Length: 374
Image (cartoon, rainbow, N blue to C red):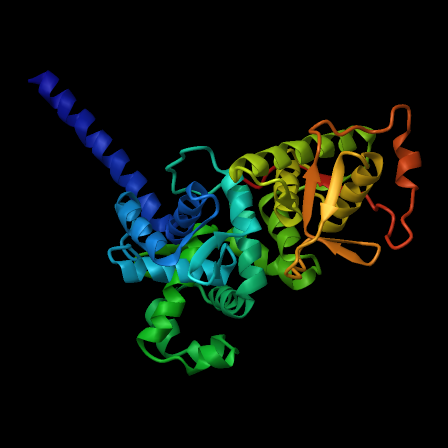
């Protein structure tokens, strides 16, 4: 009898733990995780796949993720297509003709995720990249919503969709939306904010988190790029001096990131510089070093100068402006003929840092490091 009570108590405890985990998953949201599922499908097809076939594959694979969400489940091809279109609007993917392709941002996230990981949780590095995309491509819909939540203790979807919609959004297209069209724009954005730890949900009410408040405070004061803002939010740090050891760390991260991106898509003889930048800055941030995008570019140019036979830049024929500008020319891709990048033997860091390019500013080396916020 006593044994049965112990077994019953153990079962009840396990049930409580399981329910608490599921509830946490519900609060976190999984809409962005659904988008990363699209990236995983494209990765298996060498980075490109037919739009309609991708939607069918998403529908089939979403069954596992559907278990962890109350709203936003993918139960039809039409819903799967809407997720793909949202991911394209966000910048995770592109559509060319009838095909969907990976972008440098989705490639970087795929390199950050553990192989065969089924976790719906996002790492801080993944969140930083995703938040930068929101700032870059959805600032008029994303940021006003956060400001509204910051000004009020809590709010419901009904409040936003009916009484204060036109007060929140200044974009003309958003202001014209009515009824369910507003809900289709509003709910995904709130769920994305939950995924990024900026908002939390309790009993149909939405609250801004302490991280969300800090994000608003930071963005109103700084003039950093979207990715720099995001890294600074998720990885806290303080200024340190540059050393030769730091540069060697940069070379290590650069080689590692290049290898990951090269393996991601077989037979790709070069990698996008933007994807390389996202990965290297993320790796350094995980080690307590926060570099700016300008500092990354300066270090990359110096690496090219000191490894001129191993490092090659190339440009896109389609005029893509994401990459690096050197002496009036824009480059989108980088190729390493060897993974062994070397610094000149016996050359001091202070001497190299004084080398100036005719059309570039010398390195500032205002780096940061410190403890993670949580």
